[in-house]
Length: 508
Image (cartoon, rainbow, N blue to C red; front, side, top):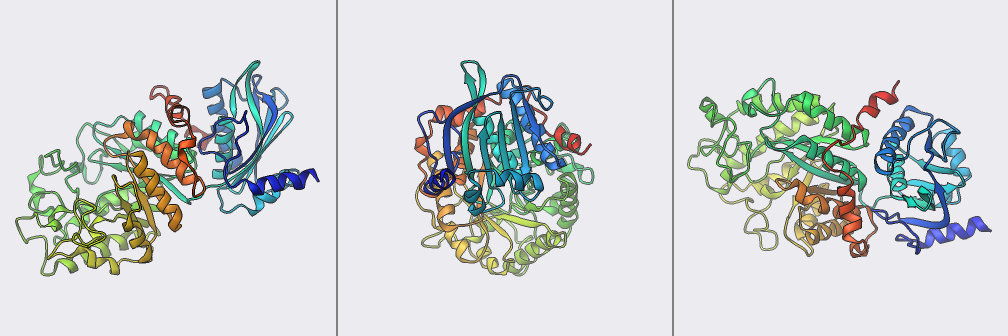
């Protein structure tokens, strides 16, 4: 009878249940019952893990419990609490589920990222389908831990949790003046809010061995960037490289008046349009540079599943070019051939690509036009190439100001393309974009940061919470200071944890 009552309670909880003593968890758990019995942990936690994947998650959580709460990891029997980390497809996971009150709710919950977390005297069980789900349960456990009268303690709970959007990504630019510890802080912050992907875009800041002219001298090597990629993998994120492959060929923002290549090596001028902003699509020599750089990034990122091609704000096709040299006899065919070449490069390597949306929208379209600074214009009509793109190309639809329903997301969704909604640093914009993503059931969201990484971090939290939560969730119920600023304050950019070391340690 007791078990059925709890399952009924779980079924009624379409949004988080917040008792008076419930800790503040962001994102809030989907289904939760908070109990009155807290678990002391001051003497240490034993992470009970069997497989290499379970042990790796345990190492990450042990490091974070030590850093955030001063709670050490200990050997079996030497601490206050045992945390069982068990994948559901193994014997340990099946045994844990058989003993769990919320097993039925867990089994009926959707997706591979769900987890079950239940506390009992001296023990916490976390069960999940994947290591990523185990980590999410552990992140919730970190949020359930606070300073009590007798030291650190973990709140009592029975939780079943899962995300609403399947793809929840953070796009981070690495400029030549970007401090890598700031990027590390952003990745760790995204993990705390249960993001599952990171897009890293070096802007003239990655030293290519094959194409050294494409980066400034005093910037980052592969060896310096590798720990950030490994950190993302240790946090069970997809880590996705990006290289702009049409507009932004200058390697700079539009207001910098700089070009990383042409300001130093004018002999490469034929690779670019007259003003240097975009690649010269009529010149086949561009593919030597692009393919060399693609290959280096794929190797550095350890054969990722995805690659972001950019392709936004190609000002030449907005009509600002002074010469027809790069348009070819038929600008539409020139662009179509370019996309066929670069998409084909990745298709042959089983890598899916993202593209920004804006050059595939007609600028004077009555409902969709003038919502981005470039767009398709006559006589180039780049929007007509959309129908020739393979349907597995992912459209990254970006808008940084709209706070109401934005029709562009549905436009590409209705065309049959996977879509991710891409907001920036305005809270209402991020929430509106994510709400549209949830309503349409699209692939997910890609929160951007651009040249305001530190300023955008609170919105990273807000977008992450919105993407995880059920439709209709009111983000205003989370106190801004404690819910979104505290996780950032927990991560000062000095002495940040090197959680990537858990990858090699777990395999030993």
